[in-house]
Length: 266
Image (cartoon, rainbow, N blue to C red; front, side):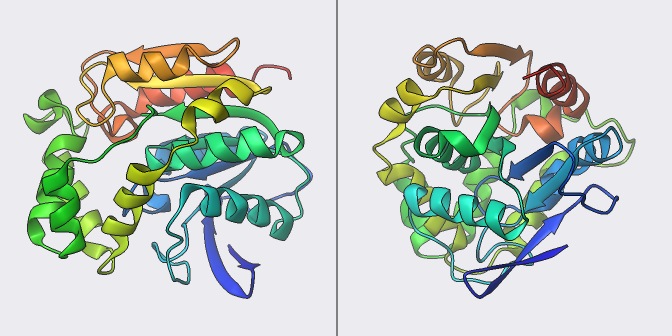
């Protein structure tokens, strides 16, 4: 599905079913230098179980027109514009990594547009390692290698794919390689310079879920719990052995956590 936001094309996957703006809606926001494909299992489930699903590609990512937006606040404003373009008054937000900061900021500043919020791999501050940031700025292969190696937990790096013969790290690397030059740096730097996380967490008024990977090397469990502790009434789910990219490493467990939360009455 294609939307027009500020004169630019925004692509959104709908979970294999035509989007119906009359259904309760869920908007999925991917992580750094990724796209809608990271939500394969989750989007399909909700689309076929009574929800209107939009897994959007952020500007300059996947099939969406650029340029990328360089700040979390700017991306949060863009997300609300996506709601308008889709004809939605309200929606539930699901965000991973940079997407978690985007949805957090949007939910805090636009509370009347959000039904519920699910944060995956969310910790504040989300500082980025200097070597990773510098190599991303230079568009070096090292940036993709570091992002991939630190993104997946050690267990996933040894295997664990539910489909024999497939390797999660190779798929993650291809996704990063498909991104245009400058996109990874744009996203990493947006996380690095964002200062509004504590204020946003404390301002939330919607139901909120934080899904954390036990072995996350990018948003460590201890830090993620410290961020979640600032959110009134937050529900926490820790996925054993999972790293930062829990949708890929533990897709069923991630879906179970989202299903148990998003299908609850408001």
